[in-house]
Image 1 (cartoon, rainbow, N blue to C red):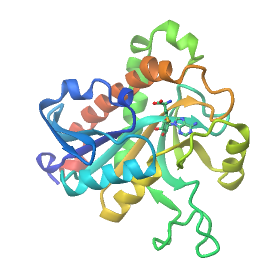
Image 2 (image 1 turned 135 degrees about the horizontal axis):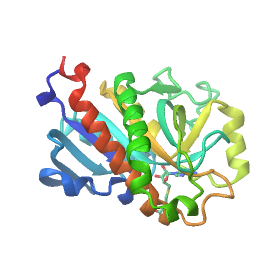
Image 3 (image 1 turned 90 degrees about the horizontal axis):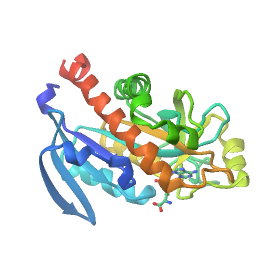
Length: 263
Ligand code: SAH
């Protein structure tokens, strides 16, 4: 596929997770569909459509399908925040999904627990090439931009020292996980999960069904239990917004060098 033919859909659930992207878009045109604003244009020279999906699986499923069907995107990336489900993943770390699962899917006894009925699948794989680029982009952001973009005061406030980029399983469900009880249930049933959020696995399912490659990156905002940061909104503004913009920008610069997409 030639670089001219690719069109990237960039989804975020929350306003802060999309911060700065619309502003740098070249020739932006906004179209409203189903209560979402789809902004089409070029990001760093590459055709792209940016959209806020809103929160939850249905919201992101509708947005993803519209991006594919009405806007003709060829690839999708999702940037956002998530709660950590294991101690090794800390606030300020980044998780790139290699697979996603819906932790609240349960049509048993008709289908095995977590399996999405009639797909035969419980786990959906993200695109390897895109996810590798997104991981590299996240690492480059951490090594080249983190210290200068995130103030020392913000780093101290959220106890972010040396962020790490992880790759692994992300679980999604229509629930903000904020108690040890809820978290333990997820850990018991799905021990490999690194992070929990509310959209990724739904976007993954829609991309799978339409045959669209996708990748998902999440900045860890909380520990998915009672000691989640006191100020989620502040985290979004001071930390997550800088991460999202920095990672996406690094991703686009890697994408331009990428032989896979231009082959
Ligand atoms: N307080 C926010 C609501 C955030 S909902 C507001 O008023 O705007 C949580 C969002 O962050 C979702 O998009 C979800 O994907 C992600 N998220 C972060 N931490 C999460 C957690 N512990 N459990 C579930 N989703 C989480």
